[in-house]
Image (cartoon, rainbow, N blue to C red):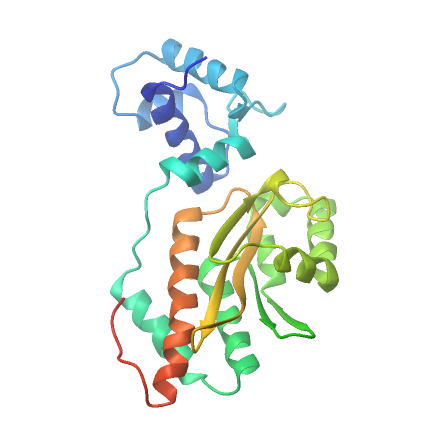
Length: 252
Protein backbone atom coordinates (compact mmCIF):
# COMPACT_ATOMS: atom_id res chain seq x y z
CA UNK A 1 0.00 0.00 0.00
CA UNK A 2 1.39 3.39 -0.99
CA UNK A 3 1.91 6.24 1.44
CA UNK A 4 0.33 8.93 -0.76
CA UNK A 5 0.57 12.68 -0.25
CA UNK A 6 -3.00 12.68 1.10
CA UNK A 7 -2.18 9.97 3.61
CA UNK A 8 0.92 11.91 4.70
CA UNK A 9 -1.13 15.08 5.26
CA UNK A 10 -3.70 13.16 7.28
CA UNK A 11 -1.00 11.46 9.33
CA UNK A 12 0.79 14.75 9.99
CA UNK A 13 -2.49 16.33 11.15
CA UNK A 14 -3.20 13.40 13.49
CA UNK A 15 0.27 13.49 15.03
CA UNK A 16 0.24 17.27 15.46
CA UNK A 17 -3.20 17.23 17.11
CA UNK A 18 -2.36 14.28 19.36
CA UNK A 19 0.89 15.88 20.53
CA UNK A 20 -1.03 19.03 21.38
CA UNK A 21 -4.14 17.54 23.00
CA UNK A 22 -3.28 13.98 24.09
CA UNK A 23 -6.66 12.75 22.83
CA UNK A 24 -7.25 10.09 20.14
CA UNK A 25 -8.09 11.80 16.86
CA UNK A 26 -11.30 10.96 15.01
CA UNK A 27 -12.47 11.67 11.46
CA UNK A 28 -14.69 14.59 12.54
CA UNK A 29 -11.79 16.36 14.21
CA UNK A 30 -9.62 15.69 11.17
CA UNK A 31 -12.17 17.07 8.72
CA UNK A 32 -12.01 20.39 10.64
CA UNK A 33 -8.21 20.39 10.78
CA UNK A 34 -7.51 19.50 7.17
CA UNK A 35 -7.56 22.07 4.41
CA UNK A 36 -8.64 19.39 1.94
CA UNK A 37 -11.88 18.86 0.07
CA UNK A 38 -12.48 15.26 1.14
CA UNK A 39 -15.43 13.65 2.87
CA UNK A 40 -15.38 12.19 6.39
CA UNK A 41 -15.94 8.76 4.83
CA UNK A 42 -12.79 9.14 2.72
CA UNK A 43 -10.86 10.30 5.79
CA UNK A 44 -12.03 7.21 7.70
CA UNK A 45 -10.87 4.97 4.84
CA UNK A 46 -7.47 6.66 4.75
CA UNK A 47 -7.15 6.30 8.53
CA UNK A 48 -7.97 2.60 8.24
CA UNK A 49 -5.24 2.25 5.62
CA UNK A 50 -2.75 4.06 7.87
CA UNK A 51 -3.67 1.75 10.71
CA UNK A 52 -3.15 -1.29 8.49
CA UNK A 53 0.25 0.12 7.49
CA UNK A 54 1.27 0.38 11.16
CA UNK A 55 1.23 4.17 11.51
CA UNK A 56 -1.86 4.40 13.71
CA UNK A 57 -3.56 2.27 16.31
CA UNK A 58 -7.00 2.21 17.79
CA UNK A 59 -7.27 2.48 21.61
CA UNK A 60 -10.00 0.28 23.07
CA UNK A 61 -11.56 3.20 24.91
CA UNK A 62 -11.97 5.50 21.91
CA UNK A 63 -13.13 5.56 18.30
CA UNK A 64 -10.21 7.84 17.39
CA UNK A 65 -6.68 6.88 16.36
CA UNK A 66 -3.30 7.40 18.03
CA UNK A 67 0.14 7.58 16.34
CA UNK A 68 2.47 4.59 16.67
CA UNK A 69 6.24 4.70 17.21
CA UNK A 70 6.55 4.15 13.45
CA UNK A 71 4.45 7.26 12.83
CA UNK A 72 6.56 9.39 15.18
CA UNK A 73 9.72 8.21 13.42
CA UNK A 74 8.31 9.27 10.03
CA UNK A 75 7.18 12.56 11.56
CA UNK A 76 10.61 13.33 13.04
CA UNK A 77 12.42 12.35 9.83
CA UNK A 78 10.14 13.93 7.23
CA UNK A 79 7.06 15.78 8.47
CA UNK A 80 8.12 17.83 11.50
CA UNK A 81 8.37 21.60 11.09
CA UNK A 82 11.71 23.05 12.15
CA UNK A 83 11.32 25.02 15.36
CA UNK A 84 13.01 28.40 15.46
CA UNK A 85 13.50 29.78 18.94
CA UNK A 86 12.14 33.28 19.52
CA UNK A 87 14.71 35.96 20.26
CA UNK A 88 13.61 36.24 23.90
CA UNK A 89 14.04 32.46 24.31
CA UNK A 90 17.58 32.65 22.92
CA UNK A 91 18.45 35.59 25.15
CA UNK A 92 17.11 33.83 28.23
CA UNK A 93 19.17 30.67 27.57
CA UNK A 94 22.37 32.64 26.89
CA UNK A 95 21.87 34.85 29.95
CA UNK A 96 21.12 31.91 32.28
CA UNK A 97 24.13 29.92 31.09
CA UNK A 98 26.52 32.85 31.48
CA UNK A 99 25.17 33.79 34.91
CA UNK A 100 25.99 30.30 36.19
CA UNK A 101 29.38 29.80 34.58
CA UNK A 102 31.58 28.22 37.22
CA UNK A 103 33.26 24.85 37.28
CA UNK A 104 31.92 22.52 34.59
CA UNK A 105 29.65 20.28 36.65
CA UNK A 106 27.87 23.23 38.31
CA UNK A 107 27.25 24.86 34.91
CA UNK A 108 25.97 21.65 33.33
CA UNK A 109 23.71 20.99 36.30
CA UNK A 110 22.11 24.40 35.85
CA UNK A 111 21.76 23.80 32.10
CA UNK A 112 19.86 20.60 32.89
CA UNK A 113 17.55 22.44 35.31
CA UNK A 114 16.86 25.12 32.71
CA UNK A 115 16.14 22.51 30.02
CA UNK A 116 13.64 20.73 32.27
CA UNK A 117 11.90 24.02 33.07
CA UNK A 118 11.62 25.06 29.40
CA UNK A 119 10.44 21.67 28.07
CA UNK A 120 8.41 20.58 31.13
CA UNK A 121 10.09 17.17 30.91
CA UNK A 122 12.64 15.23 32.91
CA UNK A 123 16.05 16.37 31.75
CA UNK A 124 19.54 14.96 32.08
CA UNK A 125 23.11 15.96 31.51
CA UNK A 126 26.31 13.97 31.63
CA UNK A 127 29.89 14.99 32.18
CA UNK A 128 32.19 12.30 30.84
CA UNK A 129 35.87 11.63 31.38
CA UNK A 130 38.13 8.65 30.80
CA UNK A 131 37.17 6.90 34.03
CA UNK A 132 33.66 7.97 34.88
CA UNK A 133 30.33 9.49 33.81
CA UNK A 134 28.65 12.00 36.12
CA UNK A 135 24.90 12.05 35.54
CA UNK A 136 22.52 14.84 36.54
CA UNK A 137 18.75 14.35 36.42
CA UNK A 138 16.29 17.15 36.96
CA UNK A 139 12.51 17.55 36.87
CA UNK A 140 11.55 13.94 37.56
CA UNK A 141 8.16 14.95 38.97
CA UNK A 142 7.34 17.01 35.87
CA UNK A 143 6.01 13.80 34.29
CA UNK A 144 2.87 14.22 36.39
CA UNK A 145 1.93 17.13 34.12
CA UNK A 146 1.53 14.63 31.26
CA UNK A 147 -1.63 12.49 31.02
CA UNK A 148 0.39 9.40 30.04
CA UNK A 149 1.45 9.19 33.69
CA UNK A 150 -1.95 9.70 35.32
CA UNK A 151 -1.88 5.95 35.89
CA UNK A 152 -0.02 5.47 39.16
CA UNK A 153 1.63 2.22 38.05
CA UNK A 154 2.99 3.82 34.90
CA UNK A 155 4.19 6.85 36.85
CA UNK A 156 5.94 4.57 39.35
CA UNK A 157 7.60 2.61 36.52
CA UNK A 158 8.93 5.83 35.01
CA UNK A 159 10.27 7.14 38.32
CA UNK A 160 11.94 3.81 39.10
CA UNK A 161 13.53 3.82 35.65
CA UNK A 162 15.01 7.31 35.89
CA UNK A 163 16.02 6.72 39.49
CA UNK A 164 18.22 3.83 38.31
CA UNK A 165 21.16 6.00 37.34
CA UNK A 166 23.23 3.09 36.08
CA UNK A 167 20.56 2.23 33.54
CA UNK A 168 20.16 5.82 32.35
CA UNK A 169 23.91 6.48 32.22
CA UNK A 170 24.60 3.35 30.16
CA UNK A 171 21.67 4.15 27.86
CA UNK A 172 23.01 7.66 27.25
CA UNK A 173 26.56 6.42 26.73
CA UNK A 174 25.26 4.27 23.87
CA UNK A 175 23.73 7.26 22.06
CA UNK A 176 25.55 8.51 18.97
CA UNK A 177 27.33 11.85 18.66
CA UNK A 178 25.30 14.91 17.70
CA UNK A 179 21.51 15.14 17.98
CA UNK A 180 19.75 11.80 18.41
CA UNK A 181 16.08 10.93 18.87
CA UNK A 182 15.21 7.42 20.09
CA UNK A 183 11.47 6.73 19.99
CA UNK A 184 9.68 4.01 21.96
CA UNK A 185 10.93 0.57 20.99
CA UNK A 186 14.06 2.06 19.40
CA UNK A 187 15.39 2.27 22.95
CA UNK A 188 16.70 -0.77 24.78
CA UNK A 189 14.49 -3.02 26.89
CA UNK A 190 15.75 -1.17 29.98
CA UNK A 191 13.60 1.82 28.94
CA UNK A 192 9.87 1.43 29.60
CA UNK A 193 7.56 1.33 26.54
CA UNK A 194 6.09 4.61 25.33
CA UNK A 195 9.23 6.57 26.16
CA UNK A 196 11.40 8.77 23.94
CA UNK A 197 14.91 10.06 24.63
CA UNK A 198 16.30 13.13 22.85
CA UNK A 199 20.00 13.90 23.31
CA UNK A 200 22.65 16.23 21.94
CA UNK A 201 26.37 16.16 22.62
CA UNK A 202 27.93 19.38 23.89
CA UNK A 203 31.51 20.56 23.65
CA UNK A 204 33.94 22.71 25.57
CA UNK A 205 37.00 24.03 23.70
CA UNK A 206 36.11 21.79 20.78
CA UNK A 207 36.15 18.60 22.85
CA UNK A 208 33.07 16.44 23.46
CA UNK A 209 32.37 16.59 27.18
CA UNK A 210 28.96 14.98 27.58
CA UNK A 211 25.32 14.85 26.59
CA UNK A 212 22.29 17.00 27.32
CA UNK A 213 18.69 15.98 26.73
CA UNK A 214 15.24 14.95 27.90
CA UNK A 215 13.32 11.76 28.55
CA UNK A 216 9.53 11.52 28.48
CA UNK A 217 6.47 10.23 26.64
CA UNK A 218 6.61 9.50 22.91
CA UNK A 219 3.94 12.19 22.62
CA UNK A 220 6.38 15.05 23.03
CA UNK A 221 6.87 18.26 21.07
CA UNK A 222 9.84 17.01 19.08
CA UNK A 223 10.27 20.16 17.01
CA UNK A 224 10.41 22.51 19.99
CA UNK A 225 12.48 20.14 22.11
CA UNK A 226 15.15 19.50 19.47
CA UNK A 227 15.36 23.24 18.78
CA UNK A 228 15.92 24.06 22.47
CA UNK A 229 18.41 21.22 23.07
CA UNK A 230 20.47 22.05 19.99
CA UNK A 231 20.61 25.74 20.87
CA UNK A 232 21.49 25.07 24.49
CA UNK A 233 24.21 22.52 23.69
CA UNK A 234 25.86 24.94 21.24
CA UNK A 235 25.73 27.80 23.72
CA UNK A 236 27.38 25.86 26.53
CA UNK A 237 30.64 26.01 24.60
CA UNK A 238 30.10 29.69 23.73
CA UNK A 239 29.37 30.56 27.36
CA UNK A 240 32.66 29.04 28.52
CA UNK A 241 34.61 30.82 25.79
CA UNK A 242 33.08 34.17 26.70
CA UNK A 243 33.80 33.61 30.39
CA UNK A 244 37.46 33.12 29.46
CA UNK A 245 37.50 36.35 27.48
CA UNK A 246 37.52 34.61 24.11
CA UNK A 247 35.00 34.11 21.31
CA UNK A 248 32.50 36.48 19.81
CA UNK A 249 28.88 36.62 20.91
CA UNK A 250 26.27 36.02 18.20
CA UNK A 251 22.52 35.47 18.07
CA UNK A 252 22.87 32.05 16.41
